[in-house]
Image (cartoon, rainbow, N blue to C red; front, top):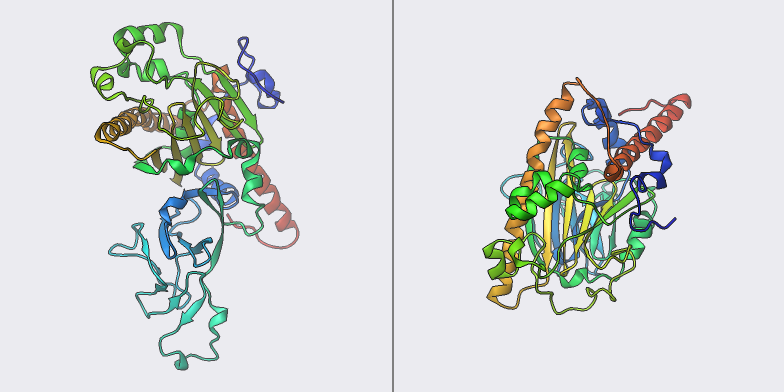
Length: 436
């Protein structure tokens, strides 16, 4: 069902009656057992975004990722083999279980380039396809066949240059998982935007609470009013902020909003440094000279309501990948990696077309540091939220029409957990023990 620009109060929620209108129970964000179930039912069963192909520029390029969301200590290697295929492996040597790829500190992620992977402990070697190629003093082993001991592989596929892994060997293809939103985004010039600014922070709050903060603009005129001029802040506080469009397709969702004008119609609305550098929270005002970002060139999923005041789209690919496109021609990605029921690692990456001069470079840097301020403001509320929900004094909370995607997120997570519990129950019935 297509969903167009909002004509009346309540019209978003009424399109998805299965989500209801009653208060939402946030016990799912404070229950340790629920988190353990989410780890098994969600993060070990779905496609997880781990990086871009630009991080693998040549044969033998690799990087590692620590994946506590799927299991304590879980580490993986992402590498480009001689055929140009991107592969993923558990970062474990098959001899005695030593971590295979690391530098000075085994808990830190690393990247580089190599012809083969060599274990630091006993020098077992593996080629870029994961096959065991050398065993030190091989004749001392008993009937050892190197073909029986390759690195353990992980499902790895690429969509529009984004690398995903899936720890479920029976999972369907990534392109199917991305669904209609993924299909509708194909062709956007992600590959042109290779200038990257990255942020990472450990947040003492449930992973879903931070996603909640980014899928509604109800908070914008209150929480972020200090970033606007006095006149603009007073206007927003009075009339509120209304997004242009919401949509839900299966387990994924999106929100479209105005903003990101380049340049703003009223320069008095922005700060002096933004006027000088032609940049700010919405990114550089001057559009890069590339194809695919003008209104008539955008893929169909972008600005679906075809609003002339459109500024940005935020696509929420369940469970923890946000892809946010801005009208001036740049994009953001967010990932939320849970480490416990009340903690997660937040990663943000800003992608721009590489600058051609100093002015363009400074405009991108201003956008990057301005974004950080907004993100910190959002994160600042989360730990206070987590502590108070954790008291269980109140666990049911009313949500407004603009918070429709929050309802969808918590219901989707709950559906995955309930399905997993039902499957485990069936396994128990058949005589096998289920473990969480």
